[in-house]
Image (cartoon, rainbow, N blue to C red; front, side):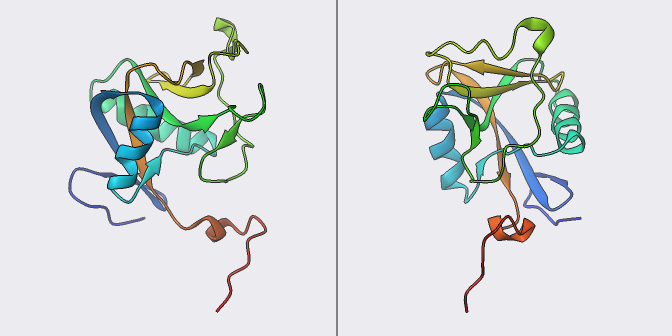
Length: 144
């Protein structure tokens, strides 16, 4: 378990912070960077459940920006941290992802379901401070 700063919530090796300011995806990402964090990267069902429970515990029932997009190639989702995009939690029963060219950013509902939304949408967001990318040994090599 990770020790987190005041106001942040610990889960596994990460710390999460729900920021209630309504911002675009890019502005939310920049805001997280000022906190030495990134928009949340959700890589497992357990982590998805933990973040959804955090949103519910904060009595937050809307959607939040998290750190995924398909800006480079429609339908090819990536995490902004560079972590592999193996886990997905699309609300397929609600037609997600819609696959429209103007919805290239990832949002998470408090139910744990994901939606593709316009990057210009104003939403609260979740920042994450996690282990360095090579922590999970995704082919990165530490030198030194």
